[in-house]
Image (cartoon, rainbow, N blue to C red; front, side):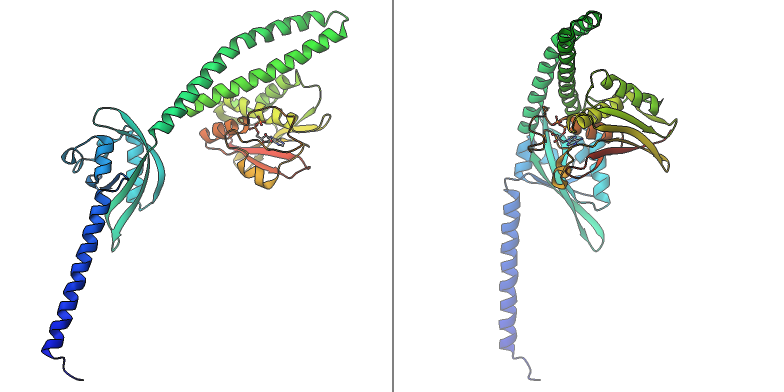
Length: 367
Ligand code: ADP
């Protein structure tokens, strides 16, 4: 092999130097870019200490570099359980996407943010996490204003409606003794409509409570069979169109919030009535599945396509079709059902196909 001349070696070293210089320039440009990027960024080490933050992050929260960098990240979080969860996930090398959190600004105000974060590791060693925060405060405040409004309107509507309903019920009990069939039929219909309106208003109230995280569960053991009968009997008072039948596996006790579970069943049975033809049968029941009980409401109604099943439990989602055109509602019943069950660590599920009826069910552990 020919020996490299001194001149050639010199040329090669010069070329390397140029490349190193290029890399330094690129590195500097990148550092400058992230330092001045509009997106707030910060790095946190394995001990939960902020090791770096860019200008956008500092000015969003109002801190000076020396007040922020070097401090524990938990100091700037309004909810200690949230930051504890974030840090524990990150130390397990999890990647976070749009994790909702609340940060405390220097002037004491709270910012609602979405945090996305991943871990930089080298040879299996935790170096730091890189966190991007997105400010969603205006959206959250707007949502809160909307919730307050819905909750206020619902409250105001509930009082006169309760009074109308009780007068109708008194009139109904008096007219049933008279022979005027028209009046008693008209009053029955008025009672049914007033009850349906009360249900919608209660759904709105419950939705705004849920969204403001004001829901507290009152968990206690109770007999499932009793609850099922209670809910269905209440519905039977105004249901003269559908046949409700019970199918149950004897006495089963579960631990849950009885009033909220009653709301879940009430919503499911009323939907079964609303979306199935008159004189069809609705089956309300439960059966044991291992150590759980499966609670279900089955109808012989219009059914639901697979595409709609995927979106059914979203807030305000309603199926647009000829068959559902005349049914009134706001698309919050099933959202509430799903949320209440989520609070109970359970999940609403549906088995259905168009024209063949639907079965809504969920599992709860047996007491
Ligand atoms: P709403 O009944 O007020 O529209 P829900 O959240 O209770 O709202 O239900 C969402 C949608 O799911 C309804 O609009 C309806 O199209 C569909 N749905 C709910 N229950 C049934 C059912 N038992 N059979 C067929 N479709 C149903």
